[in-house]
Length: 253
Image (cartoon, rainbow, N blue to C red; front, side):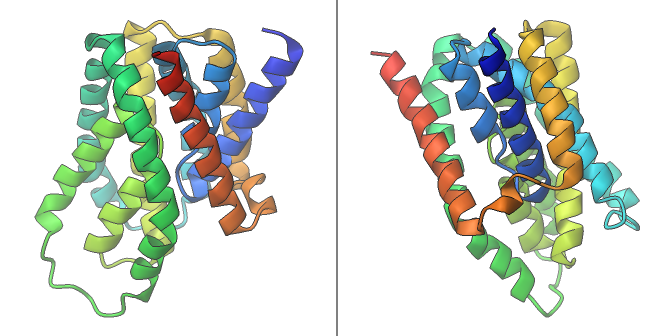
């Protein structure tokens, strides 16, 4: 790995850590960069998951005030996130790599759609005034488990998936929901990281660069992302994501 490649991976890690703390789609920065430098898709996904875990913890620490009073909820839902992450990790390591290479372009496309409609999801959460009757809340743990499975298998936009699940079911301020999202995403990332360190074969050079960058980005609250207007940021993420999806599709032919 040359110095320019290392710098590009570090910068992608900074952007991913910051965007994950605020919205949740950082993998669409780091994963395409690793692919562009010749990493096999499964190795890139494993290395990315491990590298982003410290940044997820840093982002959660930055939202610690909004987590106050949510301890019991975090513990209950984090258990489902942990189980989901393990499920996703087992699927990634045991299914043939061809399955991952076939499914990931679809997952990236789904992530891009979620990024496009994310403002509408956030607006629904902000505009809700009256408390809900609690309908659908028993399904929240199952939704969190499904999001954890998705995040353990391929982490792109798992934060947006969580925001949509939590925001439509919980009577909380959007900032407290975002803090909860960060805590659950961090649980998935850390669980997946431990699993992949134990059973996977990451590129430790890539892991170190992404980890260093993601901590900087996660703690400062998307320093790079705030330089762009939301529309421009979403457009950039979608463009990067679609490029990665097309790259994977073309490599199969």
